[in-house]
Image (cartoon, rainbow, N blue to C red):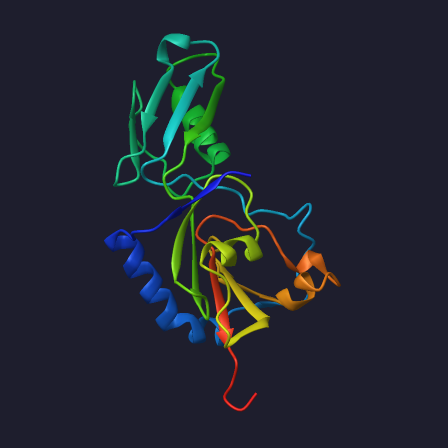
Length: 212
């Protein structure tokens, strides 16, 4: 497992955490819920979509002279030989491959292309709510919810560890809200509640109501 903690938030990261905190209650109330969390091993991860800043290897099986290693520009485009500007952002590597295959078939009789994401720009998750410090974490390997909370300094005394929320961005639909009971993870009765995280997940630890 490889991951690191970013102690000083970037302006963009800080803004994202504040925005997530402000809209968290709205998302919990309106987003579709997952009543029973899926097992953490194996856990079905959303298909990765290319982001600005990612570095792509584009390989041509029959025309290796066209092979390129290129970054995705801030506007989401990549510039290629013969194809000029192509939208890469928000597409999966398979979708971009299909697009390029169609474009290059007008130039060559035989076309076989592979798109590989060599480095990632947006592998981050956010932890906020009743933790010691709202935290932005750079995700560089497998990381579970409980591990992410630990990187945020652990739970506050006021935390409801039986009601932890993960808000996950799902393409072309509303955010998915996953309710987890980490108390069962800590006491060992249901470790499947400690699910693996995906890029851009937001973990929100709720506070206990007064008098409880």
